[in-house]
Length: 108
Image 1 (cartoon, rainbow, N blue to C red):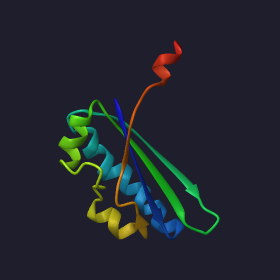
Image 2 (cartoon, rainbow, N blue to C red):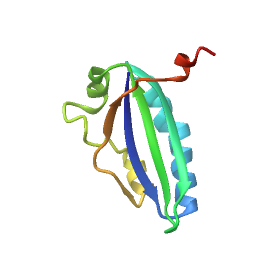
Image 3 (cartoon, helix red, strand yellow):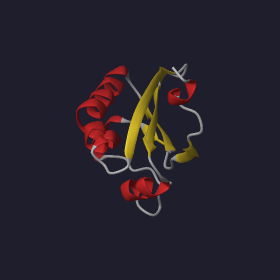
Image 4 (cartoon, rainbow, N blue to C red):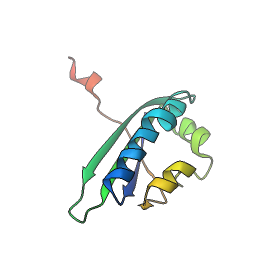
């Protein structure tokens, strides 16, 4: 499994709330229908400088599934037009990591 990690930043609480609603209502339901999509976590935190930071961790079954979503230049961030409107800035690239331990490994 591959985790794709990306960060975006909102300049206000209103923009952050709107971005979070966009993720829940539009972007993530569409992503969940992609072949090879294996899950997502979206983290939110208020920064000391007033920005609101989002860290998105999407999981795919393989690097091939990531490339099917993002293209051959898969490290380039795929930022939806609505997200571009709501975020004040965002990372131009994503990092990709092999998932080596999950809750399934805990034997619970």
